[in-house]
Length: 366
Image (cartoon, rainbow, N blue to C red):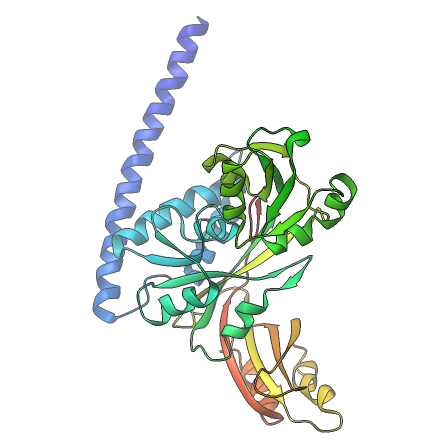
């Protein structure tokens, strides 16, 4: 009787799977038709606001028991495959593979996109600017260690726009070939993960030398080639390079997020909740910092972040980066920015894009 019940349930699953497959193919045919219309009208194939609306609608209607996080992951791949049928998409990212930026690119574009690893942040910008990639993914800040200066500096001369952000909660792993901490004589990683694990390293590996390398994946490769080397890297890197986890989740801050940017050539359409980023330099005059923020304060516009960077062309002058809540098409946002422009040497709108949903990526990032 028990075997018959199990057989009946499995037959039900098979029937449902067949229905899902039929619906997927129906959806694919509609996606192909959408792609043809976009091609004729020269509309953008990748629309972050549309994807966000899909996730919000589905999770809002989900009655369970299938979890919302899994719903998003399943539809991430459905959307990725559909977009690939509309137009094969190339996405450049700060590589190599199995870095945290690679993980972020996969979480945003899915496994059907062609992800192209590049050696530097400027190379990612150039790949998109020259049209060899449709989009790029680069890290911009970490909740523990702050901004990635190379990324902010690139926007000074580049005409590319911020078209989406990716926010991932991550944790770091100490990995090595043997998994034996007694054999470790050196620890290597990208400077950001080393800094994010500083307290744990000082407490547990105080006498072990630390070495900066270009990426967490490069660190994992070094560990794979030398049993005396341990890397701080992602779980994906441990799998790729056949390494063992010596200690998992060694980051000092358990709420450790890194924010990544998707860069492209066109600002996306307005979504249900957006963020706008601008950069500017202000005139050197009394009370300028107050007047810089006043246009937003009097319109009750929420400022999500303000960051300053020294101007390379002039000593002791600064570029300000400002993130504010809202889309550039919102009348109050555009009016506030234009009022600010009157106090600036220059002002540049870097893009309006959907606010990211937080995602957990245990062991992955940078």
